Length: 168
Image (cartoon, rainbow, N blue to C red; front, side, top):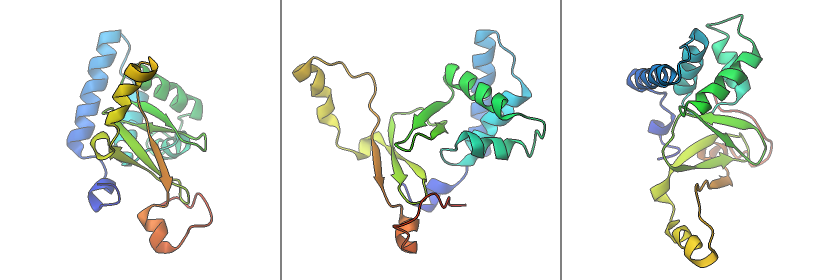
């Protein structure tokens, strides 16, 4: 459940190991090398425990790979998306964020701090969307709902003004 302590716990070692295994398998299937950069960036993304931006990943990964360039982070993220390991999500503020949760889900976006949290698809009553094809003749391939407002922390802090004071 978003906002609960469980939702902010960083990825377990088991989840990181599973993502690494999927990276190795996807790279083998495509005949591309499993580079240190790909592995470290994917691990950082999994451990971030949220939906980091390129800049957040870059700052984190540079601790382990000090010579890494921002351009390399962009290229690696593009490769991880192409391999089907990561999803790029875009919010209204046009900042690309990255997600290793590939299951169908939606997002809560805090207007004050910019925090993005997952909302599992079953929590939203979107069943009627299936009728869009029947009614309008439009076949839906993907649904992504972005719910905007104030997260619990910002509401408790009374910060309904000001933006981008990122939570630690």
